[in-house]
Image (cartoon, rainbow, N blue to C red; front, side):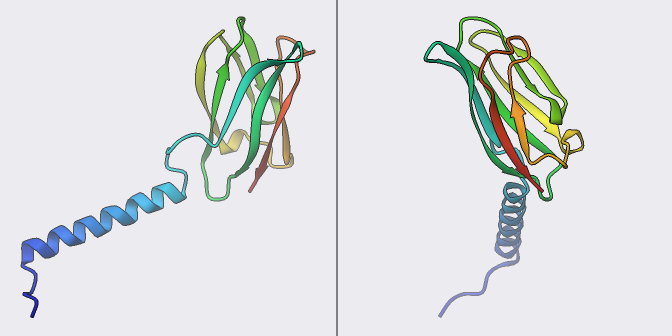
Length: 130
């Protein structure tokens, strides 16, 4: 037969359960456990391009996090006009960019990611649903 839990044991168990629920809720709501999308500046066939993107669901979220990596030997622009993002990423730099949900044009589903410094560089895209 099992011995009943003491008051201290019950309190510890309750705290552990509450913490587990809070952590699960943070993970569900995008509580900062990594980036939503990654973009990497690379050269393919003599053309510099942004690789990456994908799809992000913003439902119930207050922001989106992008990881941006420039593997090229020179500065590279990173712009998403429909999200009010315009950055210059230094050669070899890795940067995290947080985009507030209020900056994202919800009338646009497919967001164009491009280099504002070099218009001939290849663009990428990011799909956002809400």
